[in-house]
Image (cartoon, rainbow, N blue to C red; front, side, top):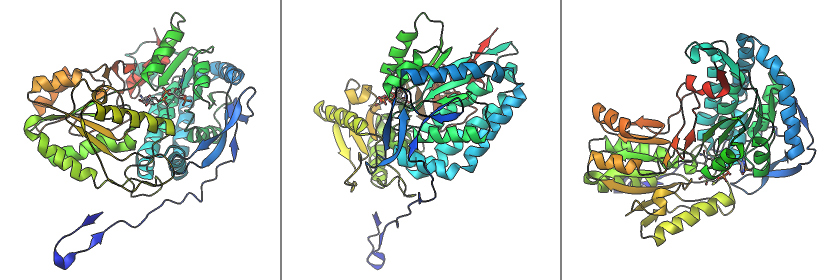
Length: 486
Ligand code: NDP
């Protein structure tokens, strides 16, 4: 809420509610597992409601797969794979292209379901998640008949059946990142969406049916961590995982010695570095985009804000002013900037780390806002007086919480930025191009943005170093994990 103070115009401005109506969305009451081209009942799984984190109300019921269900899905994928791989690339491309078009056609419905099921603001699911998911399918449709050009002219063959496990922060987009290159390369897939956000993956299953994708090419088996563990331990030829570093390590250990291909996209504690010569107002917008986008549930979130000491007070003051304008609340309202926290468990994790920050002596400021009574919410929060060893400077919070550290010189900025067990992303804010390139070369991070943050494009490779994982998704580099190259 903004108010003008001159007596003539003492008007209080506010936004009228602008809710996106979910009325036209036709969700089924209950979804089965998508195996062999059809929705089927679970053999040894169960049906579980998927909860709207903004209201704590069920959105729809979903079947969770057990070990036998996973085995059946792998069998269906195995049976479909030779014929799928034998199609000329241009024929596979037509299917992948059709999926992209159908996502576009159902974009509004998908955006609403993404926000209902996951809590993210409709503005983001409508303008980022869904268009980018379609763009990934378009991009890889284009690669399907040009695979050799993506690997320097060498011979290629698909891996076979791939097991893909995705998290809850970008449910449809992560499914697209996984499925689009896998299909273009001639693999078939068993995909497990996250326990809290299975619905858009199930709508994607309907889209695969509409696209007349051959049965068994895509199989979608929702479930919890046990289902994920069963997928990665099943008879697949390659595993692609996005999620926490702890589970990534568990998967790596489980696959050791099995000759199964593996790519891991794990957590991060990415540094967003603000130099004194940056356009500071623009940088503040970038900081907000870096950490409050998707409630901070972003693996590459700019959660470690490194500000040059000479401008630290100014940037922090501007950032706080900007944070106070963030609108927290109904994810379906088009004016909402920060939606609901994805689950009660994630809220607990955020609260525990924030408490640790206060106990360790950092100074916490949280925006005063009216949070809805039901649902899971966390007000945008900034920590100053943070020491590099504080848990809030080291551990991934995965929430709308930014920790500010300062530096004096470029060398110190680089040292601090690299002082992390993660290496997923970084931001550099400066008006000197040469400085940006010099710093970028010295940073150990898979993605580095200059004078912007959290910008994604299907043509650009994404992935990490160190405990942020290995393998790349996106662009030509994203073909490699799905191909055997000789
Ligand atoms: P997880 O790593 O547990 O979840 C990611 C996916 O893996 C989900 O589909 C999950 O299923 C599945 N899974 C869980 N256990 C196993 C297993 N043993 N074997 C195979 N798959 C498994 O992340 P959480 O949801 O528990 O989040 C915890 C923390 O992880 C967050 O606070 C955040 O810091 C980080 N995280 C990072 C992400 C990233 O993009 N890098 C994404 C999500 C979380 P299920 O949903 O049922 O648990």
